[in-house]
Image (cartoon, rainbow over all chains, first blue to last red; front, top):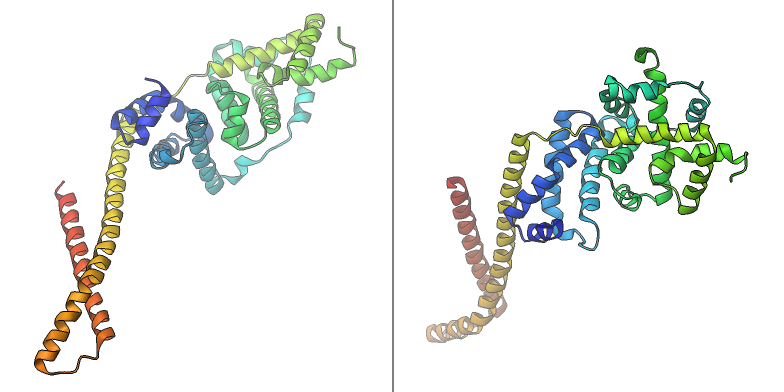
Length: 188
Length: 160
């Protein structure tokens, strides 16, 4: 069964289509929400809210649009609403270009990044991502974990394509800077 | 071959290059420069490593109980929505039914009232008052029917 056929059956209120879509997107949605809000209990609550919202508004979904983009935009809006209510500071967009330039001029040799990524501390990458502002965690998750096209991300975020590119660049630079500065000491 | 002063520009594009966020022309410039510049090639390798690690980050699994709870909640929501739709349709039907009954039966009621009035030898002059009373009576009957149906439905839902 394709996503499209499951979605059209869901529009008719078919419980099997709901089960199929839940099965298909359960882990991806949970992962995305967890990256956004960073707390399992909140991610679980938003997981339920997202599906309830999707089931409620599925008739308003335009089949000409990508279902995934629509689905993740529902999840994102709920996550952003939650963050606005409880952690407004994590939505700030900071200019990381200066720090990244400084990072690029760092001394040659194996960097903390290389050691972290190559070694047993690779699992800590998720921690570094979690330390970024929400708008950067968002764009990194959609691009590298959900493997969405840039145009789809622009649709989910409801921003121009150029903004997606800017955020992606800053997110990567911020992440690299974070790894380099915070883990410099404990990767030796 | 890229000009030496392109080096800084290319460096700033490397992160976007691994994110697949460059235009074709920019991508070509980056590839050309990297092929000739070992520093940028090493830099690009670092970015590629980071992008690869992001793609390979472990996926947290949604708890099975959460998925089950969600499915159950949606099904309850569907039942509630279907009930609401049915109630709305019933309400529209009752409104139309009440108006139809009022308008169709009013001439008969009026004729009968006149007949009774003339039989009792009483002058019949309260046409509008009677129409209003009759309309209220019909609507009250429809309202009682709606309340009875709603109570029955609620009882059925509780039993379910």
